[in-house]
Length: 318
Image 1: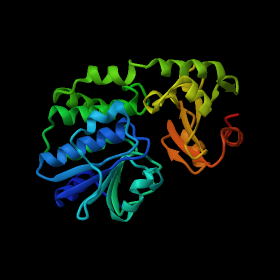
Image 2: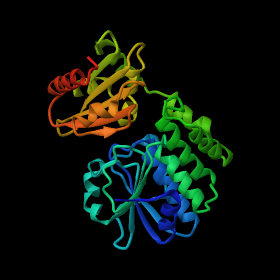
Image 3: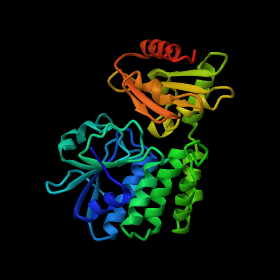
């Protein structure tokens, strides 16, 4: 893949006129906010741009994409992905578009460089930071909606600026969003201070069933489907659930286990400085950041637990 600078990425976007933007499966605030901001920014400079409708988008973020989506990618569209670290993270419905993908914009150090060209900056706390920089290169003047999309992307991936990935540039970008009219209180309240009772029941379940190892520095949180059904949680409730175990006093690395619709196990790893979540997940074919990474294994949670314990032991964490 040809690696582009922010200026070169902007030049590429300026040189085409019709864009289809892709987001990743189980979409979070960063991929959805980045896509919305990029789409709005491109429209501002006279381009035809839309986001390919993600079938897994949840109610928490649906309003970000109001008026911005299409159900099919036009034959003449230039395809761009945002916040997608690997082709494996695209929805199955988007797989047919991989040969048409021309540009990727991402911030994961584990990116597999699956497009002919792109910009990957692992130093950016959120893909939204990169999108902001590119929009500034394009001369876009942010309106309130674009600013709120970008702010959602950034605050979601930094835990409201609490995570170690937050930089001075992160805060300057957030400040620019605030100056452009973003209602930051409303966004943060919705993302970090509002929980349904089903979410609280799930947290209570985790508190009762959490496994602690290595004198409390390693935590395993197994969430069987039965527990999800009993608590009544949906995907909005489960967003950031992987942080729960990491927030327990003394825990330096936490692994959360969930079962997907195929019966495979999805692993989310969160770690403190001195521990490497991406290294743990790489051993299982996954990836991500040093502090936050993920992997998927074709087995049930019991077997996945044994695999993780073996990897943690091999890597000196147990």
